[in-house]
Length: 63
Image (tube, rainbow, N blue to C red; front, side, top):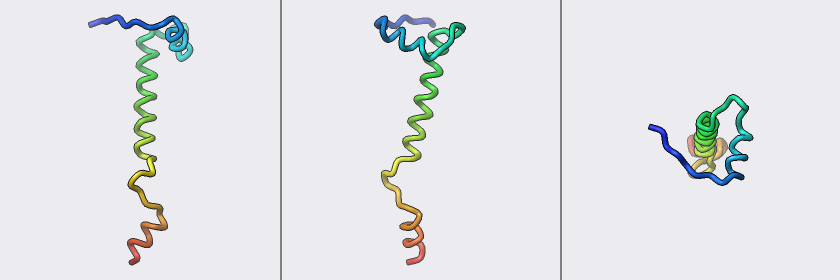
C-alpha cells in the first residue's frame, strides 16, 4: 500500500541531501530510519544510567 505524506519544501530539500540522484525518497527515509535506530541503540548501550565503573565493580567483587 502506498501513502502520501505532506512535507514543506524546505524539509523535502533537506531529505534529498541524504541521497543521490538515483535514490527514491523511500530509500532515503529508510536509510535515515536505520541510522536513527542504531543511534538509539548506541545511546541505550552507552548510557551511564544504572552503571558502575570497572573500579567500583572490582571493589564490590572483592568486598
